Structure formats: structure tokens, C-alpha cells
Image (cartoon, rainbow, N blue to C red):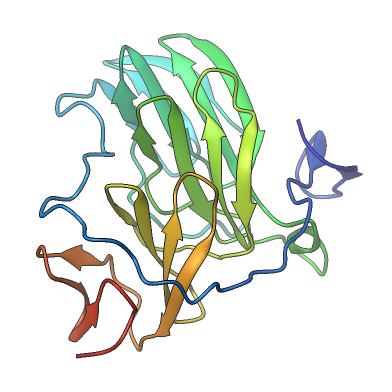
Amino acid sequence: MFGCSKKDPILPGTRYDIFDNDEIKVSGKDLPELSENITNISGDENCEYKQDSTNTIRFGNRKVYSGFSGNGYVASHQSPICVGGYAYTGLSTGEVIKLNKNKLVWKVDVFKENSLTGGTPVVDIVAHVGVDKNYVYAGGLGDAFCKLNANNGNKIWCLGISVGVDFIMVDDFIFVVETDNNLYAINKNNGEVYWKTEIKKQVKPNYDGKFITVGKYRINYKNGALR
């Protein structure tokens, strides 16, 4: 795991802060030309893993994982993503896990340290994780959006962005809607934020080959300008 360990009085076990530096810097760079299609980060179409609100996961009819269920979890329609025979998903406890049928391969905390203070922590991962090649992308309500190594769960980079809806990827860029009503364009290779644009509604972004749409907003994908 990563960073400095902390004992949390509500969630069991030792929790780990995954940030080296949580300051978000916006470079203001324009994006290059992108292809017309969204990258598939949702895995195999027919995934046999199912998940419920108590962090219980089943493979077919068989229970294969039963995680801790905290009080006051945030309602979501989370479901595992299947890639190459493995399943990846986020939990209401702020963890991302990788499963191989009935075996837990790894488990990683995805949240900012100060999310554990001040009463019941809200670190739920309610947006679907995304898997692209050898990497997992995940964000939760604990002020964290991270790129992880799919093989071992090691952190590649993390940003202090709280995420409550699904994100999309086009080529080398991820478009993420923050709970503070900003849309971010992030370089998936190094976590560099090219631009951010204020929006009004938290919904999953869409891409039509020319613009990013968030609700009624049409946004120039190159520089984040509203149209």
C-alpha cells in the first residue's frame, strides 16, 4: 500500500493515504486531435460477477467476496468490470479490489487522508472503475481519482478529485466530472490536468467526436471552452 498508515475508528483495519502531493495544477494546454470514438474501459460485455450494496460480490450464484459494509453508504448501481478473466470493482469503504473468481488478488485504498476525519467517513466508490490495457482507473467520494497498475494495484498517480459519476476516456485523455461541478481533462499517462471547466450538473460526460457534453453543456474538448 502507499503513504502513511492511519487507524480509522469506523472502518476496520489500517487505511492508507495514497497521495504524495494532493495539489491540483491545471497546465492550460490544449489537447491534440482525438479520434472519434470513446475508448472501451467497461470490460467484457458478459460479466458473470454481480455486486450488491453490502459489498458482497457473487460469481454466478456463488458468493466469492464479502466486504465490510459501513453505515450510511451512498446508494449506487456499482457493478464489477470483467477483463481477461478478472473482475475489478470499487467498494463503499473506498477500496478498489481485483478478484479471480473466489480469490482476492489485491485491495487498494482510493481516498484522501482527511476524508477519514470528522464523523462517518464518506469514501464510497460509486462510479464504475475503468480498465484500459494494464491499468485501472478509479475515483470515489473520498477526494481521489487514481490510476493503478492492474497487475498488483500499485499507484501510478492520484489526483484530489472527488468523483460521483462515471467518467470516459478518449485516446490518451480522461474526462472526469467532479462533485464540485467541474469537468477535468486529464492525461492518462502522467495525470497532468490540461484544463477544467465549471458545469452545473453531475452526469456522465459524453463525446461525439467534436465536443464533450455534460447535460446541456457542450464543451470544446481541446481547451474546455463552453459552446
